[in-house]
Length: 112
Image (cartoon, rainbow, N blue to C red; front, side):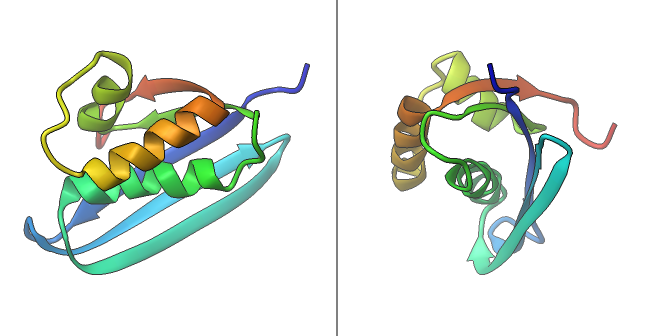
């Protein structure tokens, strides 16, 4: 069985809303890739979700991944059924990826 791909994500913005950025680091069988980007006007939560989407989109269908994020908004919405009040476009993308991949969602304390 192939080992799960490790994906580490983060997103942030200066001001909320304001200019923001995201990053995903993908570690697969000792090979490391980084995906980064930014948006001129966004929110912190959107950047957190986009980081996860971009990381997961880089995987082939039916892959296994452990996605680690410091966003309780992301992890708890995907695992504990937190209500989705906004960002419905991004949640729809995450739902599709979640259906086509085997994802373990892990939360870590930020800035630790």
